[in-house]
Length: 82
Image (cartoon, rainbow, N blue to C red; front, side):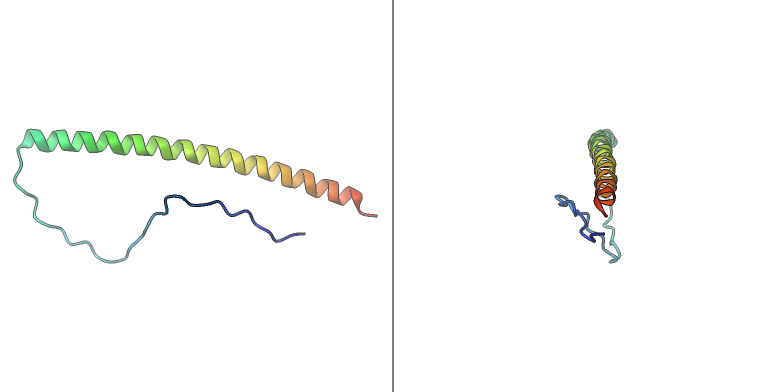
């Protein structure tokens, strides 16, 4: 059995750092503007989450298809053996 593994190309790797984050004091802002900025950030993050969920679902389907193909190929190889 082959040990070749399909490796997906990662287009947006997530960087993880163990360095502690230093927080700066929050600038004094108008509460209305701060609320608006937070709402805007939430909308953007929800959109990003939706995009990632769709990508995840697509990748899960591709994995399922590849695994089914692999099983089919392995069965054909097994039948070809003397």
